[in-house]
Structure formats: structure tokens, C-alpha cells
Amino acid sequence: MKILFAIFFLPAILISQTLQFVNDFGNFENASSFDIDLSNNIFVADAKLNTISKFDSTGKLLNSIGGFGWDQSTFDEPIDIVTNTLSLYVADKNNNRIQRFDKDLNFLSEYSGTDSQSEVQFGYPICVEISNIGDLFILDSDNNKILKFNLNGEFLQEIGGNDAGNFAINNPKSFAIDNSNNLFVLDEQTIKVFDQYGNDLFYFKLDFFADKIKFDFDNLVLINKNKFSILNISDRKIIFDFTSFPHLDEENIIDAKIIGNYLLLLSQHRIIKYFIIK
Image (cartoon, rainbow, N blue to C red; front, side, top):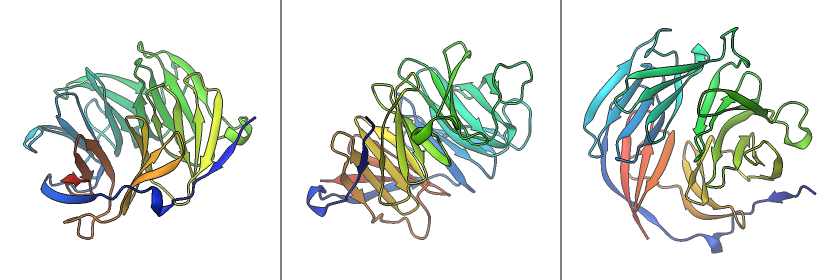
């Protein structure tokens, strides 16, 4: 039996925390996503400049590639990026493809959504993730479903199609994968959860609209333009709720990631680093 869980954000469960500004860096036109590799290098996608930039942990620019185009290493609205041990994957939205690079931003391969020889086609990918066993998941926003590929780039299955009943994906915005390889899909104001084989598990509704979700260890991070929250999956309650961000000014929150005692926040124009005071 599937159970619908409602989330009530009770002030009593929140752990009091404040943010102390450390520094900021970057000069982006319209940053769309960022990720951090195991060496603490930071990769940022700029959807307006159509670039991918690599910074070291201090904010020093190491490399940048891109420009508008359809060839390898060019982009038409790079909307989301993710790294694993060896590679960086870019959701090249309007080119209907995922481009794969090494950590020095050298082109390696691509998953094309318009290749007539491919077993599956997709359009306007807006989110990409890699499970801890190396499977690649792509959010096909044109067809409202998740596509799964293995390490060799072979298509495995689709998840959340139109015939999925209560677990059909109607207007997906983002998804995230937990340590057990379960798939959490943000669909409007509802999070729909599938196992790694596409079987539906449960769903629950948020009491606000998030723009992006991701995992911080076993907790689910919820991000919108002016709020950053962390939800404990086991009891589906908010444990951290940040709404005040020093030096953010009038910019929107695009993406965020916690590294140890630090919060790195991506706005449209820069990355801001905060120390979390508990």
C-alpha cells in the first residue's frame, strides 16, 4: 500500500544555525548548476555564456570551455552538471544531449537524444545524476520521464512514464539519488520515490515549491530562489532551514552544497562561501 506523507515544518524541530560570510568568487552571467569533485575542484555551468568553468577550492579559475554551438565542447544552455570519480557530465539542454568530459574538461563522449540509431530518444534534458554504482540517469523534460543508462552507455529503462498511475511524472523539475540508489523526483510540489529498478516506493508533498533537490549524506536538500532547507528522510521533517544569507544582496539562490562546516551557495553571478555556525 502506498502512503502519502504530508510535511509540516514545526519550529521545534529546527536546529538553530546561522551563516558567516567567508568569501565569494566567479563572474557568471546566468549560472545554472555547480558540483564539486573529490579534490574539491568546483565546476560551474553558465547557461547564458554557454560555458563550463573549473575552479580550485580557493576560487582560482583553472580552465573554461564552451561557447554557443552544436559541436563537441560547445553548448546551447548547459542547465545541469554532475561529477563522479573520473568524469563530468553536462545536460546540454537545447542540444538534446549529455556531454561527458574528463576532469580537465577534455571531451570524452556524448549521449544524444536525437540520434536515430539510438534505442531511445529524449529532448531538453534538465537534470543528470550518477548512482554510486555508476548508472547514469537523465531527466527527459520533453517526455516527463527519467532515463537510465549503464556504465557502457547502454539504455536500461525509463521511469515514471504516463502509465505509472500515482507515480506518473507530470512536471518534473529535478531529481536526486540517495546512498541506496533510490530515486527522488521533484514533480511540482510532490516528491515521488522509486528504487533503482524503477519500482515505486512512496511519495510525499512539500508545503512550499522547491526548484532543485539533492542529497547531503542521508538528508534531502531542498532549494528555491530564497531558501535552503534540509529534510530528514526517515521522519520527513525539516532539520535545517536557512532563509537569511549575508552578502547575497538581490540575487537568487540557484544551487547549494554543504562541505563539512561550510555552505557553498551558487547565485546567478557568483559562488558565495559561508561558515555554518551551530
